[in-house]
Image 1 (tube, rainbow, N blue to C red):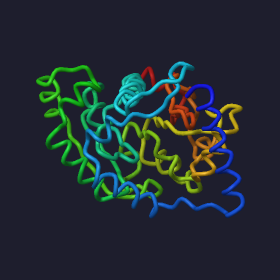
Image 2: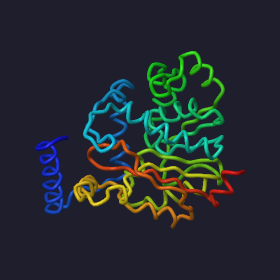
Image 3: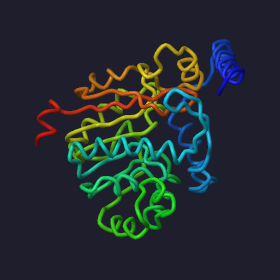
Length: 278
């Protein structure tokens, strides 16, 4: 976005904020989110989803990026963190089509059991289909691995996908080494404290969350207006501490969507030195 196009973008956000204030806007609920994503899973192919192009800011400059490139960048960040904590079992909150778990199984050699929880039945069905018949060309692009190596590695790991709400996880305490989410808590503008509490309950070591935390928006009031207009989560990352987590790291990646920023929060159960040296 350059010049007048950026001004128009900000004008649209400001107008939306005023309109919302005048009419009261809408409330984002799990039922609304489930319906919207069910439609996406039913009507979009893997390629439709991954090859969509959207405006981004890349290292401070406006750029157009397809979903697959942004996802490739973020998955490398997630993989580096999971590897550094010696993760063997992982739960993804809002696992969608299963792409994140498929790619992380390839990028993280120690992972052997990967589980995803998804709100919609359609999403679970698509994820199970993708793990049974992996989209090899997309996984090659995401990981840089050969088709034969992808096929070999995916036979060595176990995938499980469950339908349910991330506010009430159907898993026993300390079931997974790690819990992570990528732009999922953004859909929970009010019940997010329960999400962080549940994530801590079912994990043993680490949580990694990439979402539009308020600190990631900086002084850009238009980002905050946009998040408010669509009734998205935009709380401080410190809310994780209220759930008993210890903050290990918070960072703002240099590749961002144009409409708002996300921050990547890494939280742990115990002092990081103890975990990293285990």
